[in-house]
Image 1 (cartoon, helix red, strand yellow):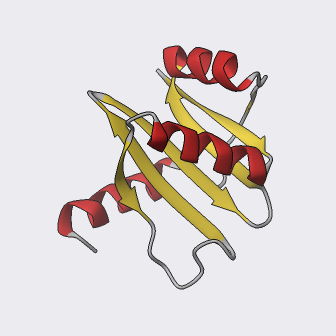
Image 2: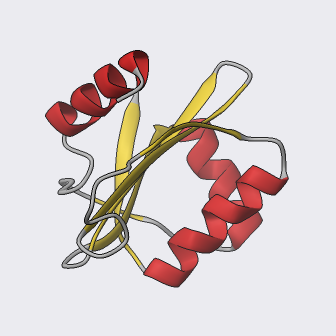
Image 3: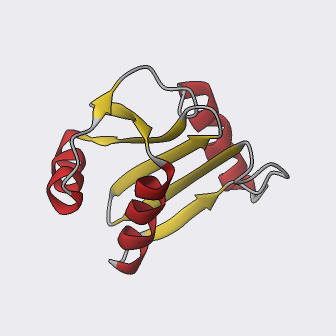
Length: 106
């Protein structure tokens, strides 16, 4: 089951992404909209069969969606206690749309 961590400070959110990329996680999809990094951001990282979804809005900061095992890893690695809740940037319909875009190279 995948939960969503919400209200992640932007600097921490960016640090997690850059550290995971340096650790071999591959960028599977990166939002390319005109408002990237201004109002919204979305990306998917993949390593082996695991995925981590990252969403961000200017209003609600960062969100991460992944498995419980990955949250335990992230909590330990980054010394973070995540707050879980209802997503804004990582709603199911947003993730589905971004997955479709990635399949078609949009």
